[in-house]
Length: 390
Ligand SMILES: *Cc1c(COP(=O)(O)O)cnc(C)c1O
Image (cartoon, rainbow, N blue to C red; front, top):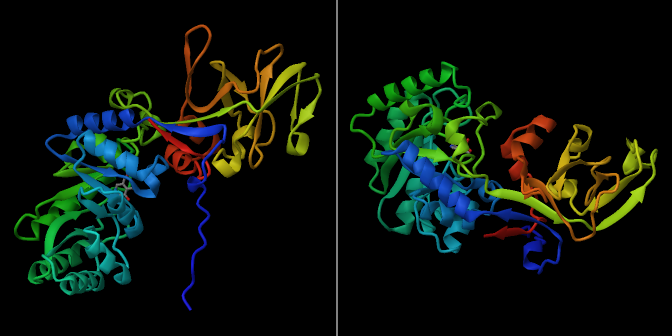
């Protein structure tokens, strides 16, 4: 008996929730334009896997295409199908080799598969032949040192020959993936690019599209741009690594996601009061404490509080007071703070204070406090948080 997945789709329930993620689609389009300008004449493939790094894959795809991206990239066949179901017609590359059983859908939905095994190519060819349409373009991935997926450089020529021989396949491109492109001085990237070029040189006729660069590669390794760059994190306005936060090009990008909520409850507590699970936070002075309805089930890392995490209220930084709970956090707003239920709280993003000055908390700030990268922060904002695209 076939198993049926039970899907509780909260996005189908009209939300009243006073907590949300704003997704600035003009920032996505702007970032796409900036990246296109930076890498020209190479083209931009917008990586929209994992629901567009948590930003909403369909809306992000449309914004990226409007900003000049010509390709989209996904991790899963299902993600590609979701784009097609939303009416998106741009070429979509599935970045790893789909399972043989998924190749029929790859063909049916007009997705471009990555292949790096003879079995994968055979499955792609069979699916294309059964569908009886034109030849299916495939991109062959070569492993030049990331050692995640891809054919060895030695095996690449045989795979490419297999594609070229087959009447139902056509070679759309050949690519590789860089392991340390975010480390500017690491010579390994240069060696990967050399290995890639050397491999391409064994393939005879130049493949129509060569690509190697992720965001860091696109920004910092011009020799790796080839025909197409595959940008995810930079498209969302975030630096590929914390070391690059101050660079000129990153300064031209605009973070697209902010995480906001409204204060749900306010009380004044005396000096010495302790709060939240474990009573780990103690007030040094009588203070206004606000409750904010976002927690670790929404993607606010539980570790953030112990690591000095803050939020913005009224344009001021205020510490998260005590343990992050599943659905709520407490915030120490300080003595005599004027804070009321309904006031806007910014967990990630920018807020203007009464003095007209902007304060900002970025995804890299969370990442550095919690020992991760901004990628994981934005991907971690859970489905439960409604996205407001604007
Ligand atoms: C995720 C991914 C990218 C995008 O990487 P960023 O660092 O977010 O730009 C590019 N290429 C491949 C193969 C990927 O898996």
